[in-house]
Length: 319
Image (tube, rainbow, N blue to C red; front, side, top):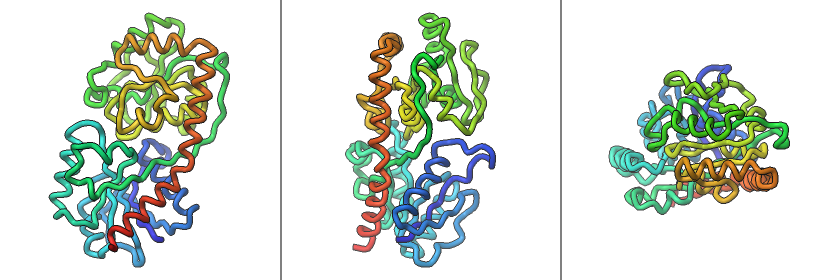
């Protein structure tokens, strides 16, 4: 089978940041290992044409040239999958429906989701026949450090934590003040994966962009995921791989499904503080550290699910 993968260029040669970029690299690795011929096109420019013999196109990048990609695929009579980036916000579903209508409701156009829950979301029923499950796959390297060798709490990418829509009513400043009151000796960290919208709160140490984020996560006591508007939160999964327990807010299309009971769900600041206090007890910390690593191992086979989903797209387009 032959796939044309349209993926993100990357913010610069030295800054391989962002989940979309990293996932695009991993898609290529996994599918080629399963026997696919994968041709890539970086989304910095419009797609010139569909390579001969292509069975399916997967648009997995910036949406600047998605209209051109869809038009090229339909002209070549090749099915195309557009990564939906569906979140639990209502505007996301409206956008997908508008795209589907604008592209003439062509049955050769599909939308991918990495959450099985999205397949049954009532807001997506208008395009339900065109949804396809293409799960994320992760390949990581790193080792787990005991609790006694760790320090501080990782709060995530500062840019996302500065976006009200992504934070869903929670304010980073309030969280930092509360955590500092409870644990005055524990440093609070945000990392720079995108360009921040402003300086961090005074309680926070901003960690500059680094290639080896995994090693850094493995030296934190906890990963506290504060956002609710991400399409797929990769960093908590990466933290689990190196044994860092995860606390997270409800994301039905993301962490609530991928992390689930291997992490700790919290609804407000009081629950966050109470859960963190218990998690920092050595026995509890060790149990959740092991649970997180086991959860990550369950995601290593997801490349096979990706292969299955793309083959199903080709079958449905040809039938």
